[in-house]
Amino acid sequence: MEFLNYFPDWAKRSIFYHIYPLGFFNAPKYNREEHNIVDRLVKIRDYYDYFKKLGINVIQFGPIFESVSHGYDTMDYMKIDKRLGTNEVFKVIVSELHEIGIKVILDGVFNHVSREFESFLDIKRNRENSGKRNWHFIDFSENDPYNDGFDYKNWEGHYELVKLNVQAEDVKNYLFSVCSYWQQEIGIDGWRLDVASQIDPIFWRDFRKFCKNINPDCLLLGELIHEPYKKWVGEDLLDAGTSYQVYKSTWSAFNSNNMHELKAVLERSFHPEWGLYKDIVLVNFLGNHDTTRIRSILKDDRYLYPAFIFLLTCNGIPKIYYGDEIGVFGIKTPNSDEEVRKTMPDESSWPEHAINILNHVKKLIEIRKNNHALIYGSLNSIYAEPNLLIFMRRSSKQTILIVINNEFQEAQKKIPLWNLNLDGSRFVDILNEYREFQVNQNHLNLDIYPCWGNILIKKD
Image (tube, rainbow, N blue to C red; front, side, top):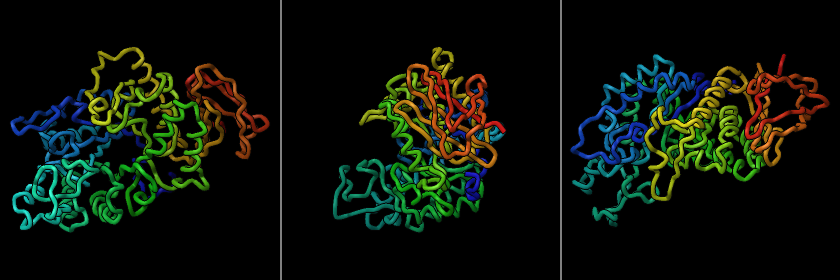
């Protein structure tokens, strides 16, 4: 990542904190017409000190535009959802977050809208004569489940989510005006782009040009669930994408005692010579608003500790979903995401294990922010056993070995380090009492704590 000149430098050093606002602030499930505006967003001020102590420097807000229910069924892109507050209040919050060193990313849900969106309502009123007919993919020869007298493209069979025709010039210009408002008037620092892989890369090229013309340092992050990630991420496309492949392999490797799986994914993706994605930036995470929470998906709570070591030492950008840093439970079901989008628990209710995990995450964030190789370095997966993973982060200034152990007992290991030009090198373990180790005959003898890890910095 040292050489990606097109990628905003501030984002290379970022630690994302992902908030789903409607859940975080305990907003009503549905946006009723009779509801008054409630400034729930101002409650975020209660967390400013928490964010600073945690060490995060970017907040990714989930959808905050006026919507019917969960935020991904937009009614008005130009307004904050009245369950959360007003544009004026949010503008002040963005400014306050900037003052404490935190960037702000918004969720751009530009693939689809709700049935209450103005263009769709116009089509319902005026049918074939609607001036907005080209905003969506309408078939007047068919009918939909709502008996509208026409059918339309939607998101994955959900008729409440109406597909936008982003290639239509007037739709594209409208969405660009949305971006202009939130970037210029409100002052946000970038976009997380919902289901980005379901929109043609041609649109994202134009989108990039427009957004970067407003602010060359804005960040464009695409939600990418399936490969090939390079179809949507690159110098003239989006800045970064989400790495669902690494996400799945992370919890699967712990639960199945198969670190070989994670090693293979890291090697395929990031190997310095042949990795498919060694020259783009991906965002890593242990969970989000669409997945079962990491504490619930892991078979043992103790796995949380090495899992966070992996997240915050892997290359790319780490993202923490609110509450995961204190071990919140939450299971996604086929019919509901509510359990993974609940209100952030009050600090007074946190049990001891929550404090322990939080302190662990704080320390790891501090380590990441203070070590050049963890921010800018390449990744080379070196060695794996069923319960052990070793990888190296190396930059122009630093070499670091990362050890991930998911065994329940302390382990003594002799790690092979062939062909790495490390024989005789000394390493200091900055995660564990600054213990020192030396590579002898291309092997490193290590004492590894149970369900833990090592962060070994090569001494000059």
